[in-house]
Length: 326
Ligand code: PBG
Image (cartoon, rainbow, N blue to C red; front, side, top):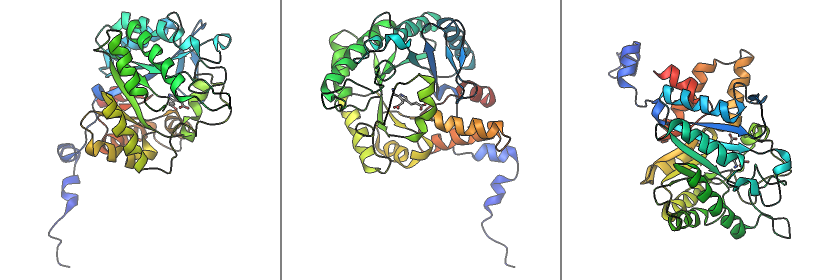
């Protein structure tokens, strides 16, 4: 045969060459670890659908935060899980100064100061007795504008508790602009907004419902995006950029790499992607059965998310990955 002129295999010959020509490198500093902090717990409680992930106590989340500093990851995204009796129709435990989320933010901030970026989840679904991300109108739909007012209130309490960033995840229209001006008027001009911009109504959020003890019956299709829509992801992300977001986010990550690549292609601000609970659970479960290599699958999926354009990745495996990537 005529020998091929180009032999792409040459650059795959050995690990040193492959390392030299790798187009994508994942670094621990770009990883954010989501953590769940539950009220009224004496010790951490495992989340059965997310092997290796727990609901933390205020003490154990502080220890996790110091491990995160050690590991050199970028930061934590803090979610609060109230006691069931503290839920109500307006999700008021979500913006009470002494609510579990604000206490957790203060505890983590006291532990790590500015050594990590502390991101607060800004949403009401963990705190409402109906499980939706906002307050309901008379017809049972989630009322956009009254919900946004509560997000503003929640964001201000989170800044006061010590969050460096708030992260509105409820997909209400106008939420980023309202939170930006609310924070500014309260004097929190340096508190950033990590906006869940293109967030899809996804089946891959399943295990998260267990993680936060969600009360939701039904779905969020009237506010989160339709998985069928790619162009709309660009609209949502561009609105958030114009409204004052500091970082955009696409969520889930793996099944939405096209949306992520679109947003990353034109965004002038950093872009994050969230490898959500179901993406993590699928890998963890298959690995437990010996059907997949946990380490290889976590490294590959994270690399693919960065390759598609993410500057920042939220992943439940952040600490494990940091250990492997060192
Ligand atoms: C809502 C919220 C959800 C997740 C993060 N924030 C759930 C939802 O929108 O139904 C999902 C994260 C995951 O699945 O890992 N505040």
